[in-house]
Image (cartoon, rainbow, N blue to C red):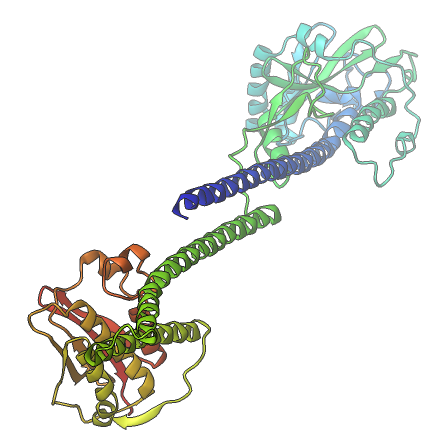
Length: 580
């Protein structure tokens, strides 16, 4: 049997290993699919947020582009004569002209640093920095000197950043002739409520710029029939400066007009407006040679860039992870249960094999004796009365031995089936001893031992089954008679006391034999612990008596323990509950 145990456990371990590998593979694939699905969902949500963010930023820039595109070209001078509107507007002022201040003279916005224009002579000026006697007029009536000085500083800075050739490159080279009598609102294409994609915004921005140029550019000046061609506003980077500019052609004269945008303020405003959608976003400039359309604004040459995202937050117990966890727990629990069941089945099978071999050996000797002695007595081979009496005594002893063995096996089977002990009597310790002592003394006498009962009996009562107590004590006395019959002191001492907890009666059964070896004490109370080899080389028995006695004691509400073990003898302690 032992040869097959290794193979059985090896097969079980192999099955468990294969199941664990399969579960690991399934779990890995499931988690990979879950992570991929999570990444796809996050990417889809990010793309949606990016589109919405681009639309929101372009929408925020649309009023600025519209406002700048709608400005008449003559507002880029600090003052202009009212009676000459659209008539020699950019000619030299005459004495007596009624001047009107340009709205750009007092214009102020955190988005725009400065408005400016390059004239036909290539000279850079700004409507916010009046020159000559216009400066005196502005100082005296319209603006504080500090504001004009600040605009002049900005203009000087712009001269070092933007040149006319650079401005030429950023403005559309082909301004178009438009009529100024058209209705602005009627010229925009209809937009549905749901048409709010980035492509719609880009189309709207381009259409709006073109229409605004149409609205503010008269077809020809009223008096001189000079054509006015005005291009749409376009944004471009000149160095590190963001310029919004256009080309205006009045007759043969060309003007480059525009404004210097405050990129830092615009960027902060735009990023703040989409912080709830893309909190880790940045805006970076897009140069003219960069034609990639990815995440670009329609209104400005800028691209939305995402900073490197933080490490993914570990996923919580999702349904997939929870299912895998439960499956692993079930697999581990099932493996443990099957291992316990298999171990118990193998142990039981081994114990049964041991029990059969031990019982076979235990039965062989008395049966052989029965057969031999009964044949001799039946055939009259023994005529001596003393010899006949000796043979009959031997047959009686062997029958008692077989009866004791059968009784223990049947009682153990009843305990194993869980049969409850129904009969319990309440009696004093003295009455208990009086009822069990004769049988115990007789058993000790047959084994060549002498039973000594202590005289100090506790004055308490116990609720127990006397027959079961007698069976337990008989097993203990029988063991003492078998294993200590060669000792010099052939006494078996039976003593009574009350446990320190005052809830149990202790009955000690002690012999004066050689004691038990250490290896025997580890399996002392195991059923069928004696093999055929042990039964052949030790006292008769199958190793069932102590296991049965402990189970009977616990069924009575008590216990059976090994009290002492040494070269001067072995003692067992039976505990029985005291009746309150």
